[in-house]
Amino acid sequence: MRLCVATWNINSVRLRLDLLGRLVAEQAPDIVCLQETKCPDDKFPLRAIAEMGYPHAALNGQKGWHGVAMLSKLPFESIERRAFCNKNDCRHVAVTLGAAAGLDSPVELHGFYIPAGGDEPDPDANPKFAHKLDFLDELAACDRLAAQGRSGRAILVGDLNVAPLEHDVWSHKQLLNVVSHTPVEVDKLTAWQAAGGWVDVMRRQVPADEKLYTWWSYRAADWTVSNRGRRLDHVWASAPLAPGFVAMSVLTEARSWPRPSDHVPVLATFDL
DNA sequence: ATGGTGGAGTATCCA
Image 1 (cartoon, rainbow, N blue to C red):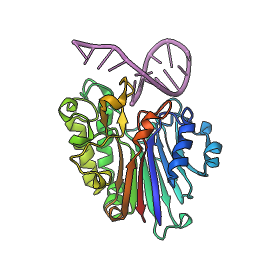
Image 2: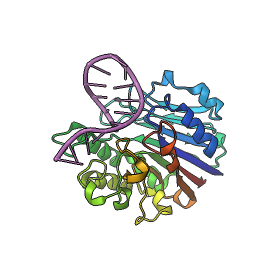
Image 3: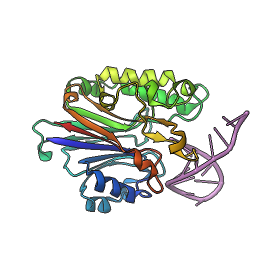
Image 4: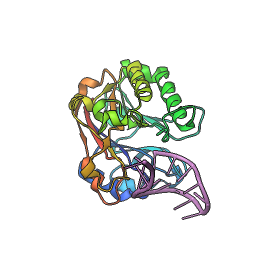
């Protein structure tokens, strides 16, 4: 079967419920993975989302900030939530799709919201950056994620808050000391990806020497003029699933929707 | 040279 997965840092699901409706009306992905829902699970607008055609949900939310969710046309076999760095932050949710979703063989789907890391790229001076680096180390050491990437059937998406490649940012030189593109965090993200044998499918489609962004700061007067973007949002496939990657699209125009998120949705289609 | 914006929840923290 063909599966379309969307990933989007929506920056408050309640404030932008209409934009979620627009995304699913226009693109009709089978599953939407959200980050920064900023919504406790008991306040999540499940009814409105079910009416949009997504009756199945996997939530991991908290009050005020962070929070991830998966909204689906297809039923899940199971739902899992993991905590990292001995914190209660809601930054991960995973589901298994199986026979009930029409799959002959199960597929795991992971959604992550990796810590942004604050402003100062020095783990001694900035605890948030230290947390980000620890989080990436913990992911790289996660045996099950590694096993899934190498030999399992798995897809991993989310706001990873790292732009690893030179052309994942508007200026490699000017961002080398800016959190999201510093060598230390890029190395850790890449080490995690390699440990799991994960394939960066967005870059399967768009060559590494072409610019590719999914985020533009709110702090630009006109994001289209300066176009100072970064690729913070990612879609990875496990090695066995990578040959089934069909296509992806970055919904850049969503950055100009009314009251937009600073991230835009990324959609990826797989033959499973 | 360094501030700019936006969301949550109502002072500031977080991005």
